Image (cartoon, rainbow, N blue to C red; front, side, top):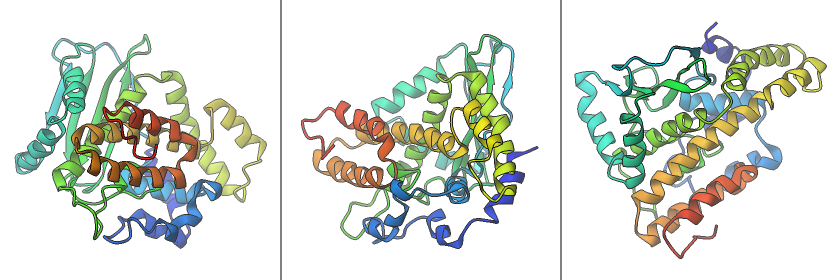
Length: 311
């Protein structure tokens, strides 16, 4: 069953109090994080709200089409770009922006020249301002051999919420900040998706696929038992998955955001502006991702500058 079916089921149950976070913050709101401070990690979003916040950008929560496949044939490796002509100009600009950094070129070249991996990039109208990564395939040895990144036709517009996307949301313009152009925003989203591919290649494929099978079961039980997380059936599923669905989802998103931050740290060489950006990321991480701070700290510390911008 496609994940969208069970996603819709519990999104309908989401509290309206969280719906304003599923859209981008407008200029002037980005720095006023106290307005949404009640969603700090001390009072982290619950199951339904987490689903709403993540699916608002990715248009879903569980990657679909994950299978075990044979090693790619000689003509099935590198990067394949399935871009309709009417979107090619925009896509070319987004790609050029990503490749303007050493980080971007290194990642792109890795996949373009990988004889054992096929990365497919497509554009879809279904999720205009978002992106998603899925259709993972592993060979029988457990090596990731294929993935598909789907970009929205308006990838250069819209800012994901700050709870699970603290890096991309830091690009929201304010009255006092430099406005990031659309191509940079799109390139940052591409970096986020490549972060998913990078991370998935390193995780245990059996566990990843098991999580994909068990998360819908967890969701169904949780939504039918009065949202009782102490249900022995759920405890058993958590032990097998290595965490609750929320923990699995947020772990994946923050790895994607780490890669997005790596791109931005290379994109902006000016220490003053980079510091402004890093400080905004840090405020969001402090509020919503404190338990994952080390990932972002590692990027800040690896930045070629003596100014760590408060990290």
